[in-house]
Image (cartoon, rainbow, N blue to C red; front, side, top):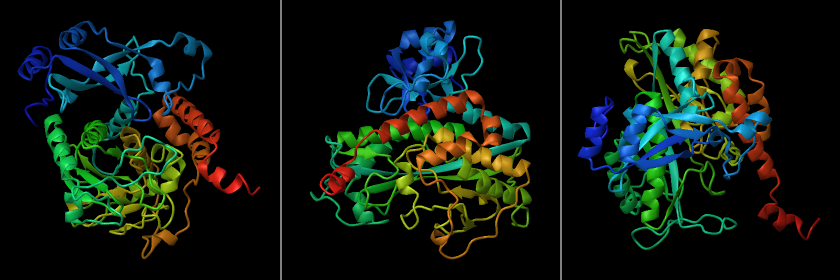
Length: 456
């Protein structure tokens, strides 16, 4: 663990850490249902005091903010008027130096009722509750996210399509350059700053590649604890936007930011080990275990029913279309990227399943929780997986919802997942997403003006 990020910090240790790193301001960050970081910035002395008196609060309505910044309202009128506070409790294992900001630190906080019950609309609590289900059975989930994103030229007018940024050679990319090292060097100023910032914040980055879209990059994270990695994915998004902005660009994690280009995903690699760290997805002779087969069966049954956790925005469904560099199915196969569920090559210790359906726009806590709860139900219900798919799975019949409206209807009706994730979360999430869908459907698009204005 880097010396600027100590998971054992507490009390006097925290005070010493702040002093050692000359921290005078701490940002307490709370991820909302969209993965937007909300919270408060406070002087270091006030932060230390709050650890003792627990007097750090955030209005509960922070979890009811739509992606456009408007409140989505509440299902309970009395609650809406009262807007009670939640208690913010910093998770000191997440305390890190804020890159590029002298004297500032970040810490992620959990939210609680005043009687110390977890505020279960919080995505962090949702993922933690799913991980607890695994722990109760003596299992431990291990994950590794792969996150794609685009660098673009500044886009001050949202009515205009995005364009590729100017690279180091003074020209924007005009064609695809998948895995091209020279193309990757065009954005070295951004990637170098990003790696430096990630090292400062203690993010466990692995490899970086140029993906198939123009100025599209992919970063891989080292495998580890899902909750810690979800924290780091959100911090990475913030740092990527900062690094791009410093070079006169935008970094976007939209699922489908450019119509003619590939979408951006957040592939999730998943495995399960026991309390001793022994892999449970492959037997000692290297064969798939029954648990692994049931886990895949659970993904196949439940992922189509809970797609808003993987495709949370109207734009998300523009990415999940056959032959658009993203799977539109829940077929599974070994090392076949046209399948929504891929088993990468590797031995017993590396036996895992890759969920290729989440978009880069997904809230990492919820995408991880959704993947793990689907697999968990598959194991508990002993669901069979389908026969392995071979060949071009893009041609397979899709059982996934094609629109956000259909996805929300199926999500709302998914009783087994709803029972495990809880009504507090489900009702909050459905409220926010329904309001966002209504807001989108009230917009008249440029396509409508272009093709309908003078013809209908």
